[in-house]
Length: 320
Ligand code: GLV
Image 1 (cartoon, helix red, strand yellow):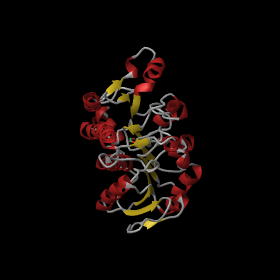
Image 2 (cartoon, helix red, strand yellow):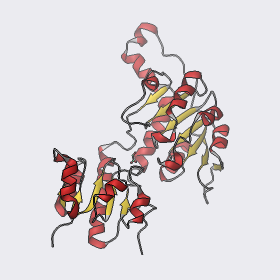
Image 3 (cartoon, helix red, strand yellow):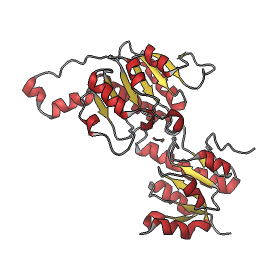
Image 4 (cartoon, protein in one colour):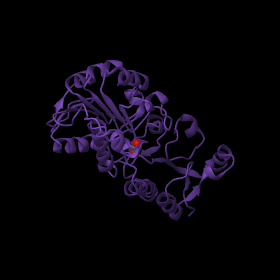
């Protein structure tokens, strides 16, 4: 029997390429000088796609009449229109669980960097200011006694909450509904959460439902001692409102791992001393990215061997 065809429109980690090559006929259309033509030529043979960040929308699906499964590298899949896939009976998978601890560790690191100004403190040493000017100025904010509000208490949100508890923080959350068996304080609105807390941790997925949820009103509610951390998706925050809030002192500081138009970060944000910026590194260790890659391969292999995916997304549940 011929091997199922898998479309790989962008280069992926070795662990993915090697894993897929063993089992499938790969269509690495990124190698072509004319990727659109390469996709059109491969189209009839393609039954699965390994996706890294690119858009999977109606236009993409229209090109692939025999597509059965979209295996997304990443827990977030706002790049994939899962409802359109579902309507066409196409399975969508993502890479949850294997990155939970890594992203939660990064979130806590970013929180402490922001509250205690650690990147500015490092620049102070490297730039020679310690010897030339003396001690780094004391930070106005401390982690001690902070009230942490988490937007999106899913698997990663809970892993962040557990770590934050160990740091002595009081934990609150907002999401679509109160969660059974969760002892943290629930707020039925985001503005209520921001009003009560001085630290807001965004772990929400991207997409229309969360687009610009954090805007000038929410930042005002967070207040002048407020710290905003975004480890989820850049689209959740209105970046212009955030720049204004950081410039005017409406909030104290922000730590951002994700941005609205990655990899482009507005110069106005880069110019602000009270913004800590990271290049979307939440899950970015070799260990964790390899585990994510193995799960992409595992989902495709499982699908073509057994007709079942390992980690289907909620819009395309496994049929019993
Ligand atoms: C990273 O942002 C992911 O969604 O896995």
